[in-house]
Image 1: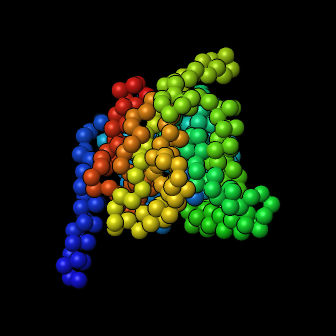
Image 2: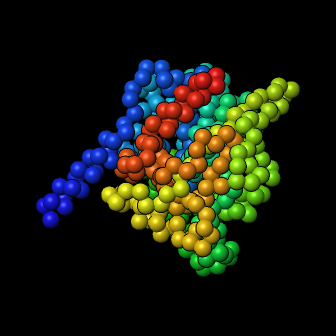
Image 3: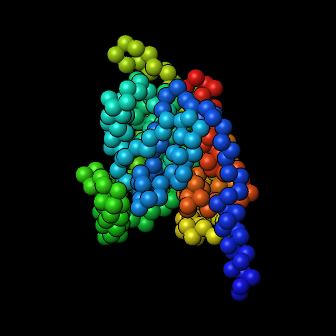
Length: 318
Protein backbone atom coordinates (compact mmCIF):
# COMPACT_ATOMS: atom_id res chain seq x y z
CA UNK A 1 0.00 0.00 0.00
CA UNK A 2 2.82 2.37 0.92
CA UNK A 3 4.53 1.58 -2.37
CA UNK A 4 1.30 2.29 -4.27
CA UNK A 5 0.87 5.66 -2.57
CA UNK A 6 4.48 6.53 -3.36
CA UNK A 7 4.01 5.67 -7.03
CA UNK A 8 0.80 7.71 -7.13
CA UNK A 9 2.58 10.73 -5.65
CA UNK A 10 5.37 10.42 -8.21
CA UNK A 11 2.83 10.18 -11.03
CA UNK A 12 0.97 13.24 -9.76
CA UNK A 13 4.16 15.27 -9.54
CA UNK A 14 5.07 14.18 -13.04
CA UNK A 15 1.67 15.27 -14.31
CA UNK A 16 2.21 18.74 -12.95
CA UNK A 17 5.80 19.14 -14.12
CA UNK A 18 6.43 17.18 -17.28
CA UNK A 19 6.81 19.06 -20.54
CA UNK A 20 6.39 22.41 -18.82
CA UNK A 21 6.77 25.32 -21.24
CA UNK A 22 10.14 27.05 -21.33
CA UNK A 23 10.06 30.81 -20.80
CA UNK A 24 11.14 32.87 -23.78
CA UNK A 25 10.76 36.65 -23.62
CA UNK A 26 8.49 38.04 -26.33
CA UNK A 27 7.47 34.62 -27.63
CA UNK A 28 3.75 35.12 -26.88
CA UNK A 29 3.57 38.85 -27.61
CA UNK A 30 0.85 39.51 -30.18
CA UNK A 31 -0.32 42.65 -31.94
CA UNK A 32 -3.81 42.23 -30.51
CA UNK A 33 -4.62 40.96 -27.00
CA UNK A 34 -5.93 37.45 -26.42
CA UNK A 35 -9.42 37.02 -25.01
CA UNK A 36 -10.14 33.51 -23.71
CA UNK A 37 -13.78 32.37 -23.89
CA UNK A 38 -15.02 29.48 -21.73
CA UNK A 39 -17.47 26.78 -22.68
CA UNK A 40 -20.71 25.50 -21.17
CA UNK A 41 -20.79 25.53 -17.35
CA UNK A 42 -17.55 27.47 -17.51
CA UNK A 43 -16.28 30.29 -15.36
CA UNK A 44 -13.55 32.88 -15.23
CA UNK A 45 -12.13 31.88 -11.87
CA UNK A 46 -13.67 29.51 -9.35
CA UNK A 47 -12.33 29.80 -5.81
CA UNK A 48 -8.86 30.59 -7.06
CA UNK A 49 -8.81 28.08 -9.93
CA UNK A 50 -8.79 29.36 -13.52
CA UNK A 51 -11.07 27.68 -16.06
CA UNK A 52 -8.11 27.90 -18.45
CA UNK A 53 -5.83 26.59 -15.72
CA UNK A 54 -2.56 28.58 -15.68
CA UNK A 55 -2.97 29.46 -19.37
CA UNK A 56 -3.34 33.24 -18.86
CA UNK A 57 -0.26 33.47 -16.64
CA UNK A 58 1.73 31.27 -19.02
CA UNK A 59 1.00 33.55 -21.97
CA UNK A 60 1.57 36.70 -19.92
CA UNK A 61 4.96 35.45 -18.71
CA UNK A 62 6.38 35.76 -22.21
CA UNK A 63 4.79 39.08 -23.09
CA UNK A 64 1.21 38.29 -24.02
CA UNK A 65 -1.72 40.52 -23.10
CA UNK A 66 -4.47 38.19 -21.94
CA UNK A 67 -8.01 38.61 -20.64
CA UNK A 68 -10.67 36.03 -19.77
CA UNK A 69 -14.22 36.73 -20.87
CA UNK A 70 -17.21 36.68 -18.55
CA UNK A 71 -20.20 35.15 -20.32
CA UNK A 72 -23.14 33.03 -19.18
CA UNK A 73 -22.29 29.57 -17.90
CA UNK A 74 -25.32 28.26 -19.80
CA UNK A 75 -27.02 30.03 -22.66
CA UNK A 76 -27.39 30.13 -26.42
CA UNK A 77 -24.45 30.86 -28.69
CA UNK A 78 -26.06 34.16 -29.63
CA UNK A 79 -26.67 35.27 -26.03
CA UNK A 80 -23.12 34.49 -25.04
CA UNK A 81 -21.87 36.10 -28.24
CA UNK A 82 -23.62 39.36 -27.43
CA UNK A 83 -22.10 39.28 -23.93
CA UNK A 84 -18.69 38.71 -25.49
CA UNK A 85 -19.17 41.69 -27.79
CA UNK A 86 -20.00 43.88 -24.79
CA UNK A 87 -16.88 42.64 -23.02
CA UNK A 88 -14.73 43.54 -26.02
CA UNK A 89 -16.30 46.98 -26.14
CA UNK A 90 -15.61 47.49 -22.44
CA UNK A 91 -11.99 46.33 -22.73
CA UNK A 92 -11.51 48.57 -25.74
CA UNK A 93 -12.81 51.56 -23.79
CA UNK A 94 -10.59 50.82 -20.80
CA UNK A 95 -7.34 49.82 -22.49
CA UNK A 96 -7.62 51.34 -25.95
CA UNK A 97 -7.45 48.01 -27.79
CA UNK A 98 -8.59 47.97 -31.41
CA UNK A 99 -9.17 44.24 -31.94
CA UNK A 100 -8.90 40.88 -30.15
CA UNK A 101 -7.68 37.35 -30.80
CA UNK A 102 -10.53 35.21 -29.50
CA UNK A 103 -9.73 31.70 -28.27
CA UNK A 104 -12.84 29.72 -27.40
CA UNK A 105 -13.03 26.32 -25.76
CA UNK A 106 -16.04 24.05 -26.34
CA UNK A 107 -19.11 26.33 -26.69
CA UNK A 108 -16.66 29.21 -26.56
CA UNK A 109 -15.98 28.51 -30.22
CA UNK A 110 -19.47 29.23 -31.65
CA UNK A 111 -19.73 32.06 -29.11
CA UNK A 112 -16.59 33.63 -30.59
CA UNK A 113 -17.67 32.90 -34.15
CA UNK A 114 -20.91 34.77 -33.56
CA UNK A 115 -19.08 37.77 -32.13
CA UNK A 116 -16.70 37.83 -35.10
CA UNK A 117 -19.55 37.72 -37.62
CA UNK A 118 -21.53 40.47 -35.90
CA UNK A 119 -18.61 42.71 -34.93
CA UNK A 120 -15.69 41.89 -37.25
CA UNK A 121 -14.30 45.34 -36.51
CA UNK A 122 -13.43 44.06 -33.03
CA UNK A 123 -12.00 40.64 -33.96
CA UNK A 124 -8.65 39.79 -35.57
CA UNK A 125 -8.91 36.01 -35.22
CA UNK A 126 -11.05 33.19 -33.84
CA UNK A 127 -9.44 30.01 -32.55
CA UNK A 128 -11.52 26.96 -31.69
CA UNK A 129 -10.14 24.68 -28.96
CA UNK A 130 -12.00 21.35 -28.89
CA UNK A 131 -14.88 23.48 -30.12
CA UNK A 132 -18.44 22.38 -30.81
CA UNK A 133 -18.63 23.62 -34.38
CA UNK A 134 -20.99 21.06 -35.91
CA UNK A 135 -22.73 19.75 -32.82
CA UNK A 136 -22.08 17.22 -30.08
CA UNK A 137 -23.39 13.67 -29.96
CA UNK A 138 -23.58 14.04 -26.19
CA UNK A 139 -25.96 16.99 -26.58
CA UNK A 140 -27.95 15.01 -29.16
CA UNK A 141 -28.37 12.08 -26.75
CA UNK A 142 -29.35 14.34 -23.85
CA UNK A 143 -31.94 16.08 -26.03
CA UNK A 144 -33.42 12.69 -26.98
CA UNK A 145 -33.53 11.59 -23.35
CA UNK A 146 -35.10 14.90 -22.33
CA UNK A 147 -37.51 15.92 -25.13
CA UNK A 148 -39.09 19.36 -25.05
CA UNK A 149 -42.01 19.69 -22.65
CA UNK A 150 -41.27 16.55 -20.63
CA UNK A 151 -40.66 16.08 -16.92
CA UNK A 152 -37.12 14.96 -17.76
CA UNK A 153 -36.45 18.29 -19.47
CA UNK A 154 -37.85 20.16 -16.47
CA UNK A 155 -35.51 18.28 -14.14
CA UNK A 156 -32.58 18.94 -16.47
CA UNK A 157 -33.43 22.64 -16.53
CA UNK A 158 -33.67 22.83 -12.75
CA UNK A 159 -30.33 21.11 -12.22
CA UNK A 160 -28.53 22.93 -15.04
CA UNK A 161 -29.80 26.40 -14.17
CA UNK A 162 -29.15 25.77 -10.48
CA UNK A 163 -25.54 24.74 -11.09
CA UNK A 164 -25.00 27.71 -13.38
CA UNK A 165 -26.50 30.02 -10.78
CA UNK A 166 -24.16 28.66 -8.14
CA UNK A 167 -21.11 29.12 -10.38
CA UNK A 168 -22.02 32.68 -11.29
CA UNK A 169 -22.77 33.55 -7.66
CA UNK A 170 -19.35 32.28 -6.57
CA UNK A 171 -17.43 34.24 -9.18
CA UNK A 172 -19.52 37.37 -8.80
CA UNK A 173 -21.70 37.66 -11.92
CA UNK A 174 -25.20 36.75 -10.70
CA UNK A 175 -26.90 39.14 -13.14
CA UNK A 176 -25.97 37.18 -16.28
CA UNK A 177 -28.91 35.38 -17.91
CA UNK A 178 -28.73 31.59 -17.66
CA UNK A 179 -30.61 28.97 -19.67
CA UNK A 180 -29.42 25.37 -19.70
CA UNK A 181 -32.08 24.37 -22.23
CA UNK A 182 -31.03 27.08 -24.67
CA UNK A 183 -27.43 25.96 -24.21
CA UNK A 184 -28.38 22.35 -24.89
CA UNK A 185 -30.33 23.25 -28.03
CA UNK A 186 -27.42 25.35 -29.28
CA UNK A 187 -24.99 22.43 -28.97
CA UNK A 188 -27.04 19.74 -30.71
CA UNK A 189 -26.29 18.83 -34.31
CA UNK A 190 -29.55 20.44 -35.56
CA UNK A 191 -28.82 23.52 -33.46
CA UNK A 192 -25.33 23.97 -34.90
CA UNK A 193 -26.58 23.22 -38.42
CA UNK A 194 -28.96 26.16 -38.14
CA UNK A 195 -26.27 28.32 -36.54
CA UNK A 196 -23.76 27.47 -39.27
CA UNK A 197 -26.24 28.42 -41.99
CA UNK A 198 -26.17 31.94 -40.54
CA UNK A 199 -22.51 32.09 -39.52
CA UNK A 200 -20.61 29.71 -41.82
CA UNK A 201 -17.15 31.32 -41.79
CA UNK A 202 -14.36 28.81 -41.21
CA UNK A 203 -16.62 25.75 -41.00
CA UNK A 204 -15.44 22.86 -43.24
CA UNK A 205 -17.99 21.33 -45.59
CA UNK A 206 -16.67 17.88 -44.65
CA UNK A 207 -14.09 16.64 -42.15
CA UNK A 208 -11.25 18.80 -43.43
CA UNK A 209 -10.25 22.42 -43.14
CA UNK A 210 -12.46 25.45 -43.55
CA UNK A 211 -11.64 28.84 -45.02
CA UNK A 212 -8.57 30.27 -43.30
CA UNK A 213 -10.07 33.75 -43.26
CA UNK A 214 -13.22 35.70 -43.99
CA UNK A 215 -13.61 39.29 -45.14
CA UNK A 216 -16.56 41.11 -43.58
CA UNK A 217 -17.78 44.55 -44.57
CA UNK A 218 -19.14 46.74 -41.81
CA UNK A 219 -20.05 50.41 -42.33
CA UNK A 220 -18.25 50.38 -45.66
CA UNK A 221 -15.00 49.06 -44.17
CA UNK A 222 -13.64 45.57 -44.86
CA UNK A 223 -12.38 43.58 -41.88
CA UNK A 224 -10.46 40.30 -42.21
CA UNK A 225 -10.95 37.65 -39.54
CA UNK A 226 -8.64 34.61 -39.42
CA UNK A 227 -9.83 31.19 -38.24
CA UNK A 228 -7.84 28.43 -36.51
CA UNK A 229 -8.53 25.29 -34.52
CA UNK A 230 -7.07 22.36 -32.65
CA UNK A 231 -8.66 19.43 -30.85
CA UNK A 232 -8.27 16.03 -29.23
CA UNK A 233 -9.31 12.42 -29.70
CA UNK A 234 -8.69 10.75 -26.35
CA UNK A 235 -11.00 10.14 -23.39
CA UNK A 236 -9.16 8.57 -20.45
CA UNK A 237 -5.76 10.26 -20.29
CA UNK A 238 -4.55 10.20 -16.68
CA UNK A 239 -5.55 7.74 -13.98
CA UNK A 240 -5.08 10.47 -11.35
CA UNK A 241 -7.57 12.85 -12.97
CA UNK A 242 -10.89 12.51 -11.08
CA UNK A 243 -12.79 14.06 -13.97
CA UNK A 244 -11.76 11.37 -16.48
CA UNK A 245 -14.45 9.02 -15.19
CA UNK A 246 -17.17 11.54 -16.04
CA UNK A 247 -15.64 12.18 -19.45
CA UNK A 248 -15.57 8.43 -20.02
CA UNK A 249 -19.26 8.12 -19.14
CA UNK A 250 -20.23 10.93 -21.52
CA UNK A 251 -18.16 9.40 -24.30
CA UNK A 252 -20.58 6.46 -24.39
CA UNK A 253 -22.65 8.67 -26.72
CA UNK A 254 -20.06 7.84 -29.40
CA UNK A 255 -20.05 4.10 -28.65
CA UNK A 256 -21.68 2.94 -31.87
CA UNK A 257 -20.60 5.76 -34.17
CA UNK A 258 -16.93 4.84 -34.52
CA UNK A 259 -16.16 8.56 -34.45
CA UNK A 260 -12.95 9.71 -32.83
CA UNK A 261 -13.77 12.12 -30.02
CA UNK A 262 -12.53 13.88 -26.89
CA UNK A 263 -15.33 12.51 -24.73
CA UNK A 264 -17.82 15.26 -25.60
CA UNK A 265 -17.12 16.40 -29.16
CA UNK A 266 -16.26 14.45 -32.29
CA UNK A 267 -13.03 15.18 -34.14
CA UNK A 268 -14.74 16.55 -37.24
CA UNK A 269 -16.88 18.94 -35.19
CA UNK A 270 -13.73 20.34 -33.57
CA UNK A 271 -12.31 21.47 -36.93
CA UNK A 272 -12.49 25.13 -37.98
CA UNK A 273 -10.47 27.19 -40.45
CA UNK A 274 -6.78 26.32 -40.44
CA UNK A 275 -6.48 23.12 -38.42
CA UNK A 276 -3.33 23.19 -36.33
CA UNK A 277 -3.97 19.60 -35.27
CA UNK A 278 -7.18 17.73 -34.49
CA UNK A 279 -5.81 14.55 -32.93
CA UNK A 280 -3.98 15.54 -29.76
CA UNK A 281 -4.18 12.64 -27.32
CA UNK A 282 -6.15 14.88 -24.95
CA UNK A 283 -9.75 14.86 -23.77
CA UNK A 284 -12.20 17.75 -23.61
CA UNK A 285 -10.95 19.11 -20.29
CA UNK A 286 -7.25 18.44 -20.92
CA UNK A 287 -7.61 21.11 -23.61
CA UNK A 288 -7.88 23.76 -20.87
CA UNK A 289 -5.17 22.18 -18.73
CA UNK A 290 -7.68 20.84 -16.24
CA UNK A 291 -8.08 19.25 -13.72
CA UNK A 292 -5.40 21.44 -12.06
CA UNK A 293 -2.88 20.55 -14.72
CA UNK A 294 -3.32 16.78 -14.38
CA UNK A 295 -3.22 15.87 -18.07
CA UNK A 296 -1.75 13.26 -20.41
CA UNK A 297 1.92 12.69 -19.54
CA UNK A 298 2.67 11.46 -23.06
CA UNK A 299 1.22 14.33 -25.08
CA UNK A 300 2.25 17.94 -25.63
CA UNK A 301 1.47 19.98 -22.53
CA UNK A 302 -1.64 22.13 -23.13
CA UNK A 303 0.18 25.28 -21.99
CA UNK A 304 2.82 24.62 -24.63
CA UNK A 305 0.08 24.39 -27.27
CA UNK A 306 -1.34 27.77 -26.26
CA UNK A 307 2.13 29.34 -26.24
CA UNK A 308 2.89 27.99 -29.71
CA UNK A 309 -0.39 29.35 -30.99
CA UNK A 310 0.27 32.80 -29.56
CA UNK A 311 3.56 32.74 -31.44
CA UNK A 312 1.69 31.61 -34.56
CA UNK A 313 -0.59 34.65 -34.24
CA UNK A 314 2.48 36.84 -33.72
CA UNK A 315 4.04 35.51 -36.94
CA UNK A 316 0.78 36.19 -38.79
CA UNK A 317 0.87 39.81 -37.64
CA UNK A 318 -2.08 39.35 -35.32
